[in-house]
Length: 454
Image 1 (cartoon, rainbow, N blue to C red):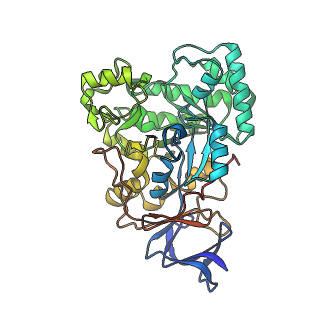
Image 2: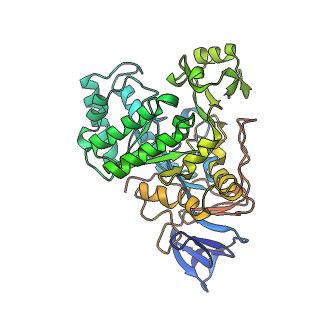
Image 3: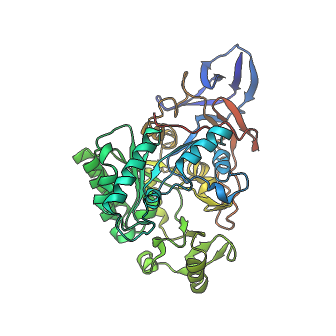
C-alpha cells in the first residue's frame, strides 16, 4: 500500500518542459510510481488541478535564533507555508547559533523543513577570539578558524560562507588561510555577501571571482539584488558571465524578488555615507521592532536604533525594481529568499519569495518562460547543492513536493506590517513523504531533517 496517492494534479516535467496529467504514488519517503495507479494508499490527496512541483529549495536564507523564540521555531514555519521543503542556512558569514547545536536540535525534534548549513566565517572569527569587525585576524586565529571549519565540513556542513561587508577587516590572506586545506574540492561550496554595493559592486564581483580562482572551489555570489540593483546590475551580470565563460570559474548567483533588503541596523551596512551611496534617506528605512515597530525611520530614530538597538532588523527600500527583474532573468541566477526573522518579524521575503516569484514575475509579468523559472527554485539549486534525489518529479526521487494553483498563487506578505501573512495558492506540501501542510493548515512541523553534504 502506498502512503500517499496524488490524483487530479499536473506533474511538472522539466526535461520536456510540460505538465503531465498523471497520478503520483509515494511510499517510504520516495516517489514510487507515476502514471495510472491502481494501488491503494493511506491518503488520497486530490490536487484539484494544482501543479505538482518539486518542493522549492531556498539556497540562501537565515535560520532562526533559538534563544529568541519560545519553542525555537521562527522562520521555518513561513518557509513551509510558502512551499519550501529544503533551505540553506548559515549564509553571509553568520551562524545564528553554533552549527552543532542546530544539527543536534533538528536531529532530536525535527524541523518544519529540511535544513543544511554553511559554516559562517564571521562566526568563526568570534570563536577564534577576534570579536571585532574592522581588524585583521592574527595568524593564530586564522589557524584556529581553519581547524574549526575543517571539523564542521567533515561533519557534513555545506562549505564556508563569508560576510565581507559585515566584517571588512577580513583580508584575502585570511580567506585563503581558512580555506587552505579545502583547495580544489568540488564537493563543497563557498559563498559570500559582497564587500561593497552600489558604485563599487564590480570590485566585489572581482574579489569573489578571485577567491573562486585561487581556491578552485565552486562559489555562490549572494543576493546580487542588494549588491548591484543601484544602476550597474547588467554590468555585474556580464562580468560574472565573463569570468565563468572565459576563465572557467564555477560562479553562480542568487537573488530575491524584492527591491528592498534587510539586515541589522548596527552593522557596517549603515555606516555614514550609505544614504549618499544609495541616493536615499532615513524615511526609506523601515524599523521593525519596539520602540519603533513598523515605523519609517527619522534621523533621530535611525541614530537611536543604531546606538541602542543594534540587533534590530530593518528593511531598506533602496533598490531599483527594473534591475531586480534583470537579475531574476539571468541564467546563472537562482531565486532565494535571504529571509531572516527576529521574534517572527522581518522582511516580507521570508514569507513570500517563492509565491511572489511564480505569481508576479512568471504568471503576471511573464519575465521568463514558466518552466525555466520553475527550474530556478527546484532543479538548479538541487544540482548546485548536490542533492541528487531532490528537485525533480521522477520515480525514485525524494518525496519533497509542493502543490500550487498557478492561477491564484501569490504572496500576501507586505511592507505594511513586519508580522507576515502566508501566501495564497499553496494547496499542499509534502516533506519526506509526509503530508505536512494542506489548504493552509499545518499538519506536521517535524518532518524536516538536517541534511549533511552529499
